[in-house]
Length: 507
Image (cartoon, rainbow, N blue to C red; front, side):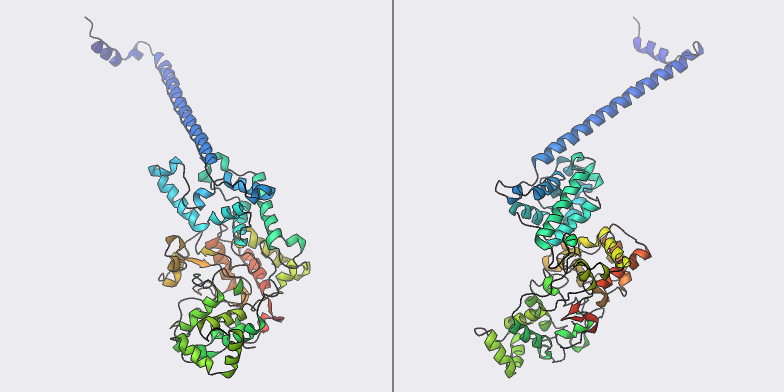
């Protein structure tokens, strides 16, 4: 009987090329052909699996996602409906809403690690829930929300490339991007166009600041007196204007505030001018209203240093003029925290600064700006500054993370302070770490030093750092810095008809 195993072993060990040298090349050709077929098969199988995954993901994406109820007004608004369809097709909600039903690959070991970071960054950078709710109700998103969407659509930054490797259908073509931008323009013209704005600028992210705000004139008069009254402080040495000088752009031009007894505060003073347009007050947004903000410094031991509102009220009651005013305006309320801060807030509503050079330009005066200033505004929009600094106040409409593109705090050096925590100190949500109220850019040339920590000494350096830390533009040229700075200097307005540089410290 033949031992086939032994036979095959001898056959395989026999060097047949000694008998048939030509067989060597032929053998290599056969092996090469076999390898190519195997590789082609593997590639084909891989492509088939990849294609199948893409097809499944597309089906999954279309089955889920935000939907409009049958009675949603958006269904009758072609521009809004088209924009909603684009954002839904891209499934922006995956990374920009909490609790979205994610595709299966988000839960795979390697993918989950990669995707978790994207999810956290998406939630940290922008939330879609209020935008989806606005579509549902037929309302307009806020000016800041419109500007943020406009920014990423214009720059073609979303959806991100890694996401598009699997979600092919989410790639936005030119028509889809145009649909979103058309909707944004329509929303601005319908809901946010400023009074007196030229038609060609009605769809701009920035609008002229209004001339006034509705107020009670008698409360304003009372609030003005209180704003400058040093008896609100514990030792009768400080008033609201000590930190919010009307002659200093509404700030004190110090790195951080100087309070009672010469104590230094932990954070740079925000301007009081145009603060009525802020959605919340203070850098970390801890005050919901102007009145609530006005109350904070009075009792802060590092600021005005009073200990009890009863003590403050006792000083005020002894002034006969105050007594008559409070009795008339607040007949059913005692003099105290609520009435004092209500009057101060009413006064602060009048601290509006219209009629800047840029306002005149937006209202149709093309000669109000130089070519450099116009180019600076164009750069301001194109690199993404207007994504946050939008609306009539060019800020105050949202809270944003400091260091979107690079780690500001690591580069700054020094200790990370409680003030650096920002909104997280209020909400205790890690997603709010270093999130601050977007400051107004109105009169920004007068409000240095800049940033929440007061670390920036020149406006040019502020522009350079903001471009690097907050926009995808990164390091911009000195000429671009100069042009944007020139534009920002056109935002200095007037208070009661007087250029802000000439306003006196006291009325």
